[in-house]
Image 1 (cartoon, rainbow, N blue to C red):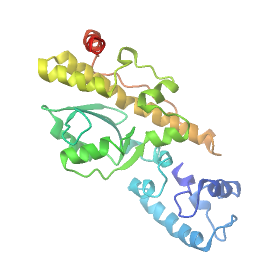
Image 2 (image 1 turned 30 degrees about the horizontal axis):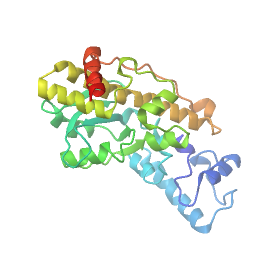
Image 3 (image 1 turned 180 degrees about the vertical axis):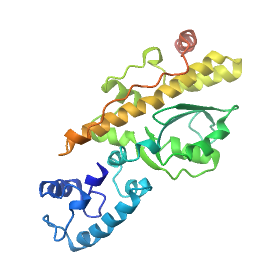
Image 4 (image 1 turned 120 degrees about the vertical axis):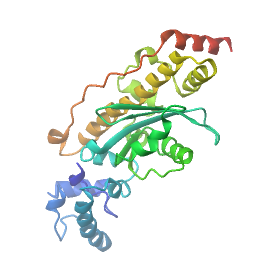
Length: 277
């Protein structure tokens, strides 16, 4: 889809992009001047330059495109950089400036990696540099700035934040809400949320309860691997509104097995604590 994209050119919105497609300008290599669609002089000038730069960036610079696309449109880069993509979700002790990262789950479409505070958390900054694209839900506002502050690093990867991509398609209500609207079932982890994850961490650290940690990691991984399904859902739904649906629609891969198993008794024990409170 990326090479069919023109809305990263200044002055070209999605309505103009559709007009270009309808006029036969369906890919970068079909661009010519004069344009069959009326464009301002500044846009005509920018278009040639941006498309030349796009061909160079295509090889190894996804940030070139995400820096020019609106927050709802970076889904367009997904297939081209899919093998350099990490799905990312973090858990923390809270939301304030003194909160800590408790666990991180990272999925690259093949393998799941987990990082735990007090164990291997410091491996994360080096590992994330292997990827050029980060896919998250609300990661631009929370996960990425939190990680940058906590580790004192900069994450300069291109980002696809599914919160904005899915909202444009009509799916809102947080990650769990979007999952339910799109038919994803969390099974025994249904009802576990970010605050519950804080309580699981407390149960682990205060009572040395390894079952709580395993449940937390199972939850963190579920958040992360589900991002792939949501990404492909969003991509395919957007593709259906283009002339390229037949050749560019993506199949859904099987979800990887979760290496951790949520402990039902642990979840129920914490839920009872909720009710008693």
